[in-house]
Length: 115
Image (cartoon, rainbow, N blue to C red; front, side, top):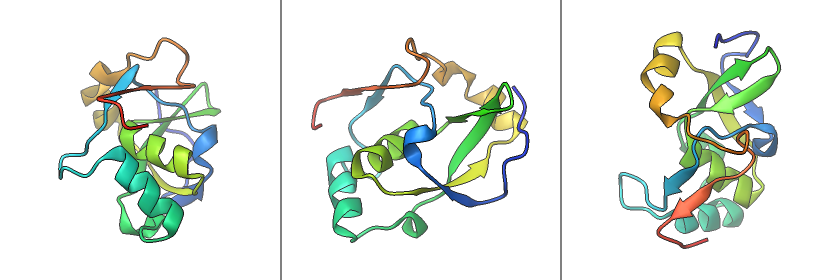
């Protein structure tokens, strides 16, 4: 899996980006819930510029895949464009344990409810 032709930081439609995990926890490290972030994005209290860009890599030169599944899921649910940045080869290798999707990254289960 190599990074090809992804601009440095760009806005993207989150619904065309694939997820890597089968499931995600419903809270972030800071304690914020996925639902809270979705609501804040929808209300405009938080924008893409307020959060780190999600890291992407491309598969087969055309499918964008995220290493940052919770943030991607929040932006997908909110219907708000997301900032993206290319993942490094080391990041892809170090986070390969996350590649647990069983549906080609089209959906993800949220553990702990809230959606």
